[in-house]
Amino acid sequence: MALVVSMSTTDVRHGDPVTTVLTWRVRPGHEHEFEHWTHGITRCARAFPGNEGVSWLRPEDGHLFHAVLRWSDPHRLAAWLESEERAAWHGRIEGIATEIGSERQSTTGLETWFALPGTTAQAPPRWKMLLTTFLGAYPLTFLIQWLAAPHTMTWALPLRAAVFPVVLLPTLTYLVMPRLSRLLRLWLYPPPDH
Image (cartoon, rainbow, N blue to C red; front, side, top):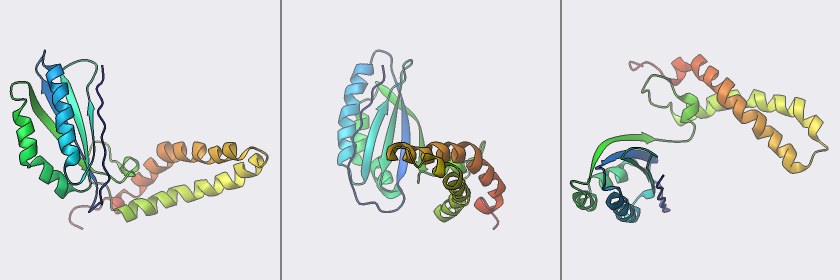
């Protein structure tokens, strides 16, 4: 059974948004108590400045729970992680569950096209990702407009509009962007001494 509790707030963004995944190991037989606790700490986190959402995931097997927390910026996330409110909530589950890990990342939405397998390299600056995406998308857009658009003029508008993303997005994601990011890797990911 998967438990998902999602809550989000709207807040003015200051800096880059950040997402953190926290993993909890729950003692066997205490899952119900922990699930009850997740509702309370989620309400508390939601009220904290800069929170943009909390989701809880529980795998089918095992006693691990994962909390996905989204914050407007790293400073507000750090304030939450070091807050008295969070510490008080953690005190309520001593002997019930243990936090065993966390992973934090800032996201813009384009990182998957610029990931380097087997490395922990940071994503390139947004302007480089934008320019590289334009270099990959423009020729495909041109080809779709030139080759496909004339043949779909008699189709209903929703169907014609679907051709563009159905062709463009998989082609960019699986073919063009991985090759383009490898081709431009020295520009996208300059060595540390530059």
